[in-house]
Amino acid sequence: MQEIVSGLIVSLDVAALYLLVTEVKSRFLLSMWTAILHMVFPVIGFSLGNWMLHILLQWSGIVSSGLLFFIGLQILLSSKNPKYSVPIGLLAVTASLDTFSVSISFGMLNLQKYYFILSSGIWTFIMSYLALHAVKTGIPIKNAPFKWIAGLSLITISIYTLWEQ
Image (tube, rainbow, N blue to C red):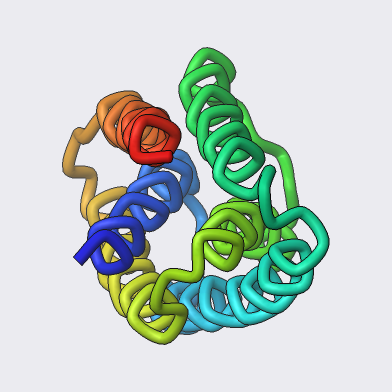
């Protein structure tokens, strides 16, 4: 269940980011590309996390909690500077990099990678497409609540993980 909820959490950050993008010609393709990247980066991250698990077995819980905490903190801090001037394709890549870091932590905790990967891809497609559609139709939605929910959720997961050690 933690993997499915985490997939939703990382998609909220993308939705918050895409609420700032006003000129997108192909919302479906951008949403699909971002969803695919949200599934590719975790595969790499899980592999790296499993490799790190064998090397840092006794430190993995602390390291993964720290990674999740600082990723959540970075998401919270990024809500202060909502201006982006990145090409759309590169925007999808940068929006997906957090799934790499989160999946390293999950790989170190030996969580179910396929649930997270599928959840992340599906939720990201849905949330990014809805955000891009809302911007195009002029529906006024603030992106800060999405970033706060995502950031605080990752920090909470990191504290819970550390507590369970």
